Image (tube, rainbow, N blue to C red):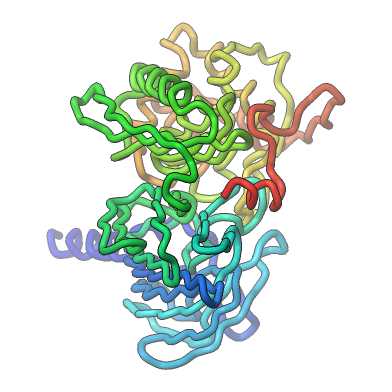
Length: 443
């Protein structure tokens, strides 16, 4: 019995995140299989003379089933090798809602090594003597996470990432803002190690010319006595952003416990907003919304698009001062019943999802309310990708009450969906979706 238990533990640890992966893809006589990334070592070289950003990534991964291994990368590969041999790659649809890539080489179950070379030009600005680059991301459009720049797995998977960055052809000193452990190797050269719990949506990276954007730094003493470094940089008032950041951190820790990350990075961009693990690009009005996402979204993490509504609903509920809503205020949605391959968040989360969370708070106000549950859910599920089904199980266990009928009606839309009314907004007004040009201008 001990031997069997040990073997089961070994198997589950080798393929730790594959239970959260969507079904493998049928390709006629073959199949493409989702894999478990273990480590990724990437090096990016920015060359101002050629105005080229070149990346090389070494990926160690494990797969539980035989077939073509799946990954994703939006730019075209310049070279790909698998276990030391050159291979080709293909792009395939996932149920018509998204696409991924796979290596056209059938593999047996086990551990393998994939090396991918690619150039990318997304969100890079080349200037005379210096450059700017950022991993801007979005959960509202398909394939807008790390795959825009470097090869990665889908959001269900967590892996250790090592990143080396070098800027060539510039005498200007650059600064790197990123949510990992940074070692400066030389002027304009860095090595970064990111936590093994990160997913494709976790990484924050922004390079700019030193001194171009004013910054302010301090430390925040967490309720668990850690000294957490806080960096704010903005062309607006750094002191205003810093004061608000420290106040919001104190509020969030009171409600949900110790800050879950090793740092806080706030880029006060003046518009929009996107969350990362302990970091954000944000407007001032969206600051609190983005920081709570470090608990819900980048603390407890959605495994796919059908779970993405939870964190946006929770963050928007905070924006609404944790209002309680009666069942008469609710709308029927399908926030969690899209294709299992969908990778984006349903926009109903911001308004209708927010009201649904507020209704759960009203429903359970005699049992300490929903914020208490959210704290418990965060503590139990921290850095573990989850699906809506697991969210439901956690609610029912915590309150000892069946909520399946509510979710079937208002989250899964099993009895139909209510049409959008004229007065309703489809996304949070604090951070409207930005255009490609607007994101580029924020570099």
